[in-house]
Length: 626
Image 1 (cartoon, rainbow, N blue to C red):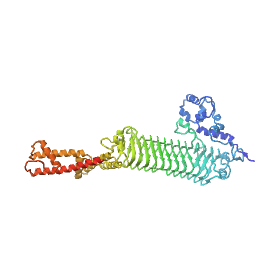
Image 2 (cartoon, rainbow, N blue to C red):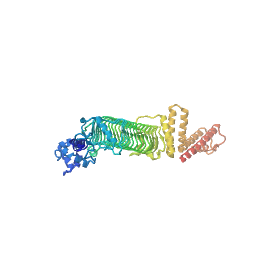
Image 3 (cartoon, one colour):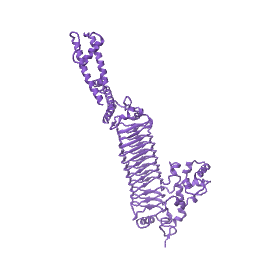
Image 4 (tube, rainbow, N blue to C red):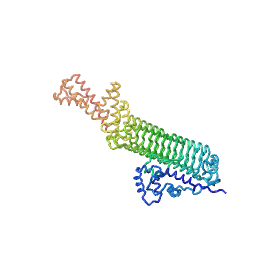
């Protein structure tokens, strides 16, 4: 008769728990789980004083070191970290008994030391138990190599394959394998994981697991004491790890995971929720061509090196409080649902070129220390850019399309935008200094498709300049003419007649400058004459002033010619005669016949007068219509 496996009452199991809890607990966890008479904070304060450690250092050092040096603690590590403490406080539902028989000695095949068994025999037994009707519980199992490449791992039951606290001292091979069951690897220790092309059809849970090393020391880097106090669950990958081409059909939880080497999820598919909160990537993180079918949460993740997110996000993507220490590459990424970058920190270049955002995007209180390149990005829905920091390096929005949204600026000079050749829709811009607001934006050959200039009158000022920018680049005359042509068309589109008028004047001014630059004297003269006489049809007062100047000029000419007037020869008389000639084609009241010169002057003035009267009516009508 087979004996029951006695592993869960063995010293090895006790040591295994202690080693694991030493890695994932800190002093606050231990004190919270013990019924001590003294207040937890008093005990910690005393220990800080005696050890001369800071509170954060105390919390983040291995628990075994803390207990060893804690002279004021009425407890030892082995006494405090018992199986009973774990089971009563962790909620892990650890088993009391092993379901596998001890065929030889005190342990079953799966719990016997690796040196005492054959890897092939263990692997065969493992796959046989899963495929049969037996239990799927392998908690604390000990494996050498576990080669499951190209196999289909599926059981006739929906229960998860329970590999919590299991140890694989060699290679866990799952290349091109299909894991049809839910798999629970919490607190497992796997030295060489190999998951290229693996399909995980069920939930994949690996919190607190250690990948790449059989042991761990210390606590996750990058977390403060207060943050670590809540970080009970994390997996650790010590070396490089590849999930290239892997397919995760169920939920994936890498919360608090530590990736010590390069990590590849290249072309991986996440069929359900993918959680990476608080994860730490010490090497390169590759999500190129990855597909996230459900929510992808990268909140408070730290990327120490190059992070590649040329990926597709079909539902919400969250990067709140995420820290990119190396370059972040979102080139051609596609976001189909809401996207959040809140208090995200980019220490190096951020490349979003040609990304597509199909739903609402929030970029709030984010900082860009390097180049932020949004060239060719399409924001199909509203985008909210709120108090972003870019320093002296403009955020490049060249050829980008912003359909609508809100841009709330920090104090002037702290965030610059380059919208050269971009398309700006119904976007509202606000900031602490309305008069300086647009100086942080380069509008050069920018298309305005619904942009409301009327809401930004204070920023436009009396000069109505939109091309002024803080950098030293000098745009060409052709670029400026095109810029104000596009601004005029945009103002006309939203019915802003005042803006359209002012931008038209700027457009014509730069056209005149272009004629002068190209030595086109004829077109320049005509353009200048239109401006002088009527402000290109936008300034009827200029027509009135030019008409008065014409009347005075002709009055002087009449006096020089010795014109005989019936009312006398005073200056006022000549002005009256000139005015009469200006408004009529009939020669004014004179004595006797006049010379041909006088008649020519009078006829010329009458012609000019008719022209200016018509020009005034046109300009006045145009102005009233606007």
